[in-house]
Length: 437
Image 1 (cartoon, rainbow, N blue to C red):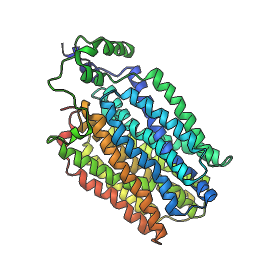
Image 2: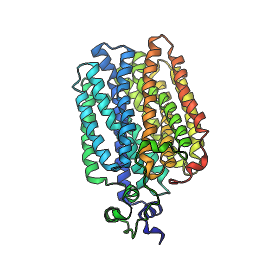
Image 3: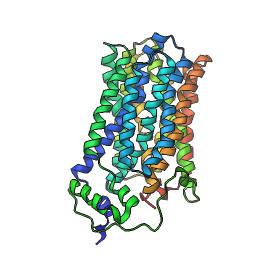
Image 4: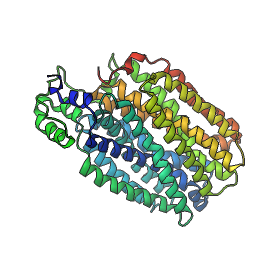
């Protein structure tokens, strides 16, 4: 019987409530990423004022967390292909919880940067794991949609966390933003421990027939029938991030990593500098946070829309279109001045295309790598992308200190997304047709 294999059961049967709960938890975990990355931008005006920081120093502080994320994606995420997605997610949540809480205790730039790096390590290691977890808990019909919904968690975190930050900054100092983030991370740590078991697809690939009892216990919780066997693999699973550079995977690895790197350079310039730029135009810190919230609202709509239309259109050509549109909208945002409602409107459309682009890239990553390399490949792309993320805010700060005008800076930073669209053109469409090869 074809559905004797648990992987076939997952892929070919309707998703149960249990599976949707697993997806929802991963959406919430990505929302933590969205809030945490934006937390430093929400707090940035208060930090800058309290410590008399210039744009260059502030850019370094913003980039510190991205450095930790890059390291976590490169060195922690591959561990999920060896020991499992769930234990890595739990360890990373611990790092995020303590990193956020201890960031609130910082008294200078160096200590804050250190705790931001620690928080970033947790986020970077977790992101690749939840991307793999969602792809492996979804059935074949809903896989792209579920991965897209997971990615939409980022702007959801921006909206909910940003709204909380607006309220907190109106009543407390910048430290309250990090205390809030740490408390929410602790709640998700408990939720993962209770409600998110290991990926069945990982157990099948890692343990083969020996993992059947554990797999059937999870299938029972999902309301699915038990599997009768787990086919043994003809080859051993790969366990090292460098295995994604073999002769078969190297071309796609170069393409997706380059595209992600270029796009994230643009993405994190936009996300990192929207609040400080709005403050520089004469608005309050809470007004600046509200503009970021509008960008995140646009991102939610853009991400969900892309996840739906990806069932009918090519991921490759969707990605090219939305990344090109992101570049255009960033240029427009750079030329928008002085009127808060107009700033919010332009930020909304920018966020729509920005997060649609990110969602598309996550879906591409879930497709181009097989199960035994999915976390490693995704971690490498995200890790290299975070290096681009560090470059974006830092380069933006340097250009400002050099006296380059705001419209010209926006045009320069928009090139990353435009070039990413060009790189994605090189990816063979056939690679996105099936989840495993």
